[in-house]
Length: 302
Image (cartoon, rainbow, N blue to C red):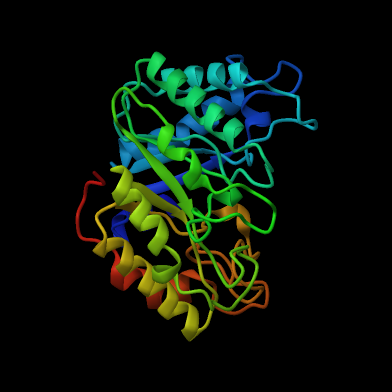
């Protein structure tokens, strides 16, 4: 399987496993502690294979942009807390599970306080379930590292204004950061934005506030410029101890020949697949040229 290849051959020890909250908690019953048990069991099988069978870490990633359902008022902060308390409770005894609160909140103009409130509710729910594992908390503006201290073009308030106010009684929450391509959208095949300099302000903010972060999404196109950009970013993460790990976007058989990141000729990171033009995909190019040579030798994340 894909997981076997990455663990056994590539020596990877961390997987970000995405899902939709609407699939885990169908709209008919709403966001909360009532799950679609068939869907959950399939998801849990994947997580347990990664963690128990292969001995790697798994990040649970609700891929919802801090939204649920078709309407902005489809769920409340209390329901979000209930959801996380239920989900965390089901993995409370699995030390290799990491809880990612939500993927890429964005365009929440003048709602940074709501992101903080939702993040805090998730932390409270996870800890109330008795789970002591690492939590990753996102900020505003697609939780971009380059804009962490800035107002973005969407009018998103700087995440740095409030995200240092999160309270975790176990002090085991880190910041969830994404950083990709020339306009940070993940849709271009060129890498013109230098990760290290773009992350400098975030890095200093983390140091000033005694916090850690993980870069859980980045990528690059099938070209020498991106190979160097990905190499530089991974090395920057290794050189700065405020960063505790990384995950690159994206692999999995569901992608087929499609490109989840960085240009149509890039393809996915799925081993044994090609891009949609029939050429080598990112596993054969970006991974081989920029990721594999920079994979840390340590086995444990933390």
